[in-house]
Amino acid sequence: MTDIERLVAIEEIRNLVARRLRAMDEKRWADYEAMHAEDHVSDTYGGEPAVGAKANTARLAEVLGHIASVHHAHTPELTITGPDTAEGVWAMEDMLFWTQGDTEHWLHGFGHYHERYRKGPDGWQFVYRRLTRLRVNTSDGANLGDLNARKPEGSQ
Image (tube, rainbow, N blue to C red; front, top):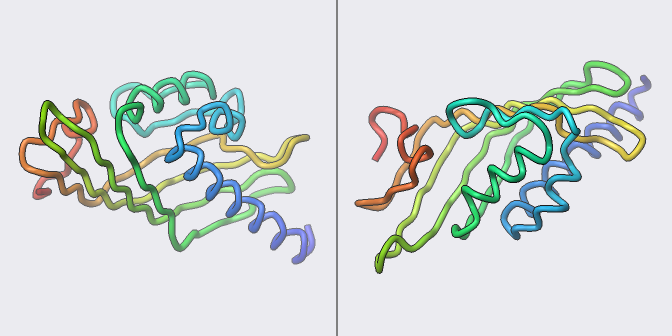
């Protein structure tokens, strides 16, 4: 792979990540699913990983369906591992907003996405993702089920 080919691949992956985050926040689930390989594994939700693009998208749609979300990914560390494979770590920040009963609640999280990508006939896709959280702040009384239960010690 030439230096130019490597830089083009890195830029394509950056765009893939940006499109994924926007599709997630805009709840465009068909677009979101299409960015993930059929054999994608997501170890993001706690418990058993979601295996497959459809299962991952369905789980995320269930978690975020009633939540307004804003996700940012920053400062990628991308490594091209082969002509059609790559891996990356992205600093992430997310803000979630929802109503619980009559009360507005929020979550502000910080951490990293650990990802692997594969290039196929239709371009780059996600094949693996793990989210590690460094800190999660929530409004008093916030209840997000499994997500809330995974707050690190010392989080507010």
